[in-house]
Image (cartoon, rainbow, N blue to C red; front, side):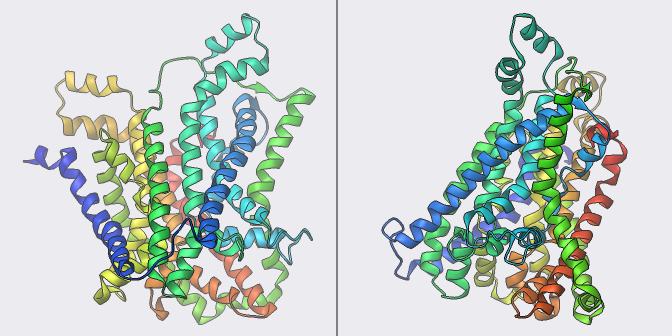
Length: 515
């Protein structure tokens, strides 16, 4: 009986039922609501066509920018040793765990109308592209770094012996080896940029807002469900194809082989030192500068600005953010593990793991309001929405960890008489536990910074830090702007703390090399 319950088909029932209730049902309900209303022709309407095309273009441009910037940075980190390298690797994913509101406010504090640099990029496409690069450059660098670590020393030495120079060896040996790790990362970058809401809401402006923001405007302000459904159809089709491409690319990742990796060299020459300095400078410009700008603007707010931390609304928002996150993480752990186990041998389940990224979070929120009107003010539905948005991080990281477990270890355990369940608990799970911890860390940071669903499903007394920051940004006056900056700095610290606390077991098992 136990073995029957643990089959992939049985394990798939829980995540499939959850996705049906939280994604498929609400979206279909929203489509049904808009079906009876007259809608525009997407390709005949210049405005809607521009929104969709711009969303695709900015996502593709962000992928290209992240690739062009991330490849050389990853190569430098993979090939050179220098003081502080371990710390750089630990801080690499810090921008990725920041809430979208913090990232957007950081970009505005740096290159907005009142930015610290004196450069104003508002009402230009560069503001949104910079925000996308802030989030996604670390993702490409991390993936390329893992890919370059798979290059065998013997293959690279053979190419150099046959007369290939460094540039030719890179194109013929190193890049092809790293490509299976880079392509899935680029699919994720496109998906995050195309379907992102918080960054686009703050940085897109009127002209460069993405289709996700347009869906929100159509539903929230115009009650135009027909056009919103039309855009949602198009966006979900594009996102679904991207998620399928990611699942295919990730499944083809090479299995770990026994080889001697390329040894890093000490950055002693002038060229190597310049390369390291350029790589670190680029990482700082894209990832560190906006975060420091938030802290700088918060410090400039003075005592009058910091008083907001002691206000009752802030204390209540902090309590709500903390308890909603903790409540959601229990469901995240169960759903993430069940989905990862069911998806180990199923391409469809791998692709469905990205359904929360495929469907519009705005459409899901309004669909939930329409489908479950009796529960829209319930804590259970809000926490379930948090879990829905966060658990794919556990699924993805756990799946990657399972894929990296050498097959011969499980085969050896089975040969020695271990049952499938015992093989899993004694062989597979200990090796994949680090991926689970890292996925939970990303899920915690996501829940702390959740914004879109909270904007629609929470009661006034359930205000979180993200919605409180948005309220201050929507009010006139420098005092409200200072309060938003201070709260953003506090939210940044809270998200970082949530990530580090949960990720600590994984970091403890690694050396600084692989942190």
